Image (cartoon, rainbow, N blue to C red; front, top):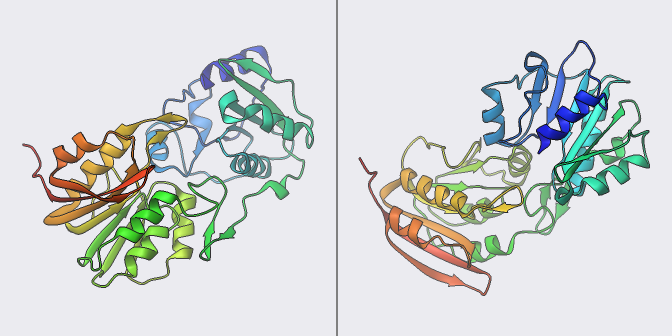
Amino acid sequence: MRSARLTLALDTGALTLPAEGRIAVYRPRMGDDLSSLPQDRVTVRTGFKPDHDHFARTYSVAPAPPYAAALVCLPRSREAARALIAQAAAEVRPGGPVAVDGQKTDGIDTALKDLRARVELSESLSKAHGKFASFAAGPDLSDWAARPREIEGGFQTLPGIFSADAPDRGSVLLAAALPAKFGGKVADLGAGWGYLARAILAHPGVKRLDLVEAEADAIACARVNVSDHRARFHWADATTFRPETLLDAVVMNPPFHFGREADPGLGAAFIQAARRMLAPNGSLWLVANRHLPYDAALSDAFLEHREVTGDNGFRVIHAIKPRRAKP
């Protein structure tokens, strides 16, 4: 979908790239086809580790600004979209094109309306249930830049990260259900901005806590929110992360969306990752939306699991006796 609009914009002259210089592409997602751009000039800028690793196989992810041009792949959050557009506008040389692309379901109409009030925006190009428009870098959009906010409990968050306005209800439920004492080595998979990590570290017995989070902005907030010397921070994909040693416990509130689409396979992958990380006597503490079909994945990964508490929206599950890896 994105590639269709980008190709059309280049073919029709709606977007003209400078003859030289780096072209920054902000926050593309796996599945986005960037092949209509000159591969040797593209720099992909994303803080989501799976996307970062995917594009790093083909494109540069290192060169710093300034850039000659930019393509902003619109995120769903309005605040995060504004911040990303402001970042691109500041990092492209004055006069260079800044293109903004997104699906209607991701709020592209609102983003372009907001932009038209601030910059001289091109006519929008519509195709494949989305829109594409561009403007010349130069106008000051710094008031749209991402700024930390303090929420309940004294936590710091940033626009666009999961549950940026308050602790997620599932995480609150899980924190209240954690055991009185933990084993020494624990991991928080999908740690976000650190709410569960603080709760884990308040329990006796924890000697080391690995916070594993794929979103760079979230793990940056976690570093601020969790100052305990026992905490170790990892910008990593939880489904492929490998701890230094096998763990006594894994705690997690796994994601179950890829973009706008629900994908319970993500949670199942987190469950399998926990199985691989745990020592034979280790245990998993998991919160999940009640409707998600995780029981088969739990039975495949653990010999025993049970619901320990919950409400009409969520259930907290304790799983023990991780199964040995299949040959």
